[in-house]
Image (cartoon, rainbow over all chains, first blue to last red; front, side, top):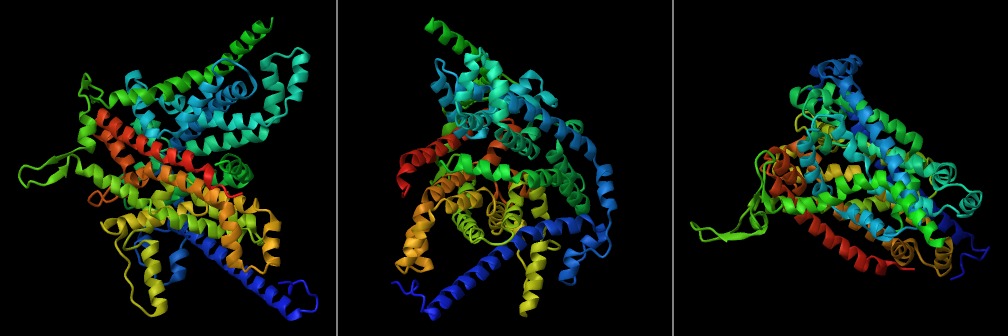
Length: 294
Length: 312
């Protein structure tokens, strides 16, 4: 029982240390295999995007040929912009992403302030309604909203892409959870000084909530960047397509041009990967914050 | 005086709420009920909606006796096939969760380059789904794709001549192929981070106490780690099931068109096709409400048992 504690028992100690070392090696092996399997498809994507079309349709003769092109055709990335209006797709995605993100952070933070800091009739019932809708499958609400867009004549406009996406129950919920953790003292002091609610919101709550606001900003923008079904439903001209739908149009028209498709996919991923690398601590923190409570 | 201050606060509160609340009502709250109403109609948006009572639901969930063969058959056999597909794709959830836990445990061993590994593992789950789907469509290419090349060259290495399956083109392999892809996406994402957080939340002295009692690694896992992370496991399982019932649209749309032979059409893709491709709004709404009810039951299980599984 207390073998480990006896300083004289060197043999046992080293056995434990050896076991620990073996476990550590095993852990590294698992992580390395995991990382390799994660990276390989991306590597394959980049490789394909740099090949000529002929080279793509040759079965590789060995492992090296599989992942390293014999000639690097950087021009594929330029051509991808020419075969479809890729720049237009990109621009649309940026416009929609920025507009939705600003709108969502703005309206969510206002509502979250009311839910977390103000006393009013019907607050709890209303908040419960917000929470309850988060459980409902997206397709339930999507159907009437799609019909609404058709009836409003908003199909194929930025209005349809942006406006319904601005009002987020999730964003309100997330910010409300964060605002709840802020201390009340500052606010009380401000109230005594005669500050109105809006002053308190702009000068106390918002500056203290920068991490939460940053998280919501990044989440919203990235979520919107990958959105597929909604833009597919409400756009039909090439001019209004966002990047994901644009990539898809690539595929149907040039179904065999895998080099352009892969180049397009790389370019669609790039902004997200860059944003993620610089903001990943927000991700990890917010997953921990909203998830662990279960 | 007091009442006046409260009234003022209420007015201010609704002022703050208004921008969000108005949109929330129009685009989320009322649509829930409108889609329920729509499910009792036959409507293609262009013509006048036609009230048909429960006909959409009896078409969706009902059975009838086939006059010719005298067998009982579903009114919409496709729906049941698609429901089965959706459930089948969820069979990967336990394997996926185990792998996420494995990675989290390895990461939690104070390894070097932890943040690098975490970033790499997380990448697939943050990339746009369309780009990932297109990439895997190419990976699964039977002739020139990465996977079958690896199988071929891996076989060579071991002295076999291996030929990979047709993956997405084969009715039998299409679902496993999508499960493999989903596995690749999900294993290092949210679930791994949640597990990592849960592992880091276990007090060190639990393990120290067990070590003094002479427990080995395996015993420590089952006696301490597993019960301590069970709330997280339960949470991940519930969220994955809820997500799974709503999944599969993008893959079906981009990679398989729902085929071959409907083998990869999920409920979500069926809703989309009814709404968009066939403009059958009422039927789409009926399926969506069916999905809602299924998810509601899963959530009830969560509320009823979620709290009880906490082992502190």
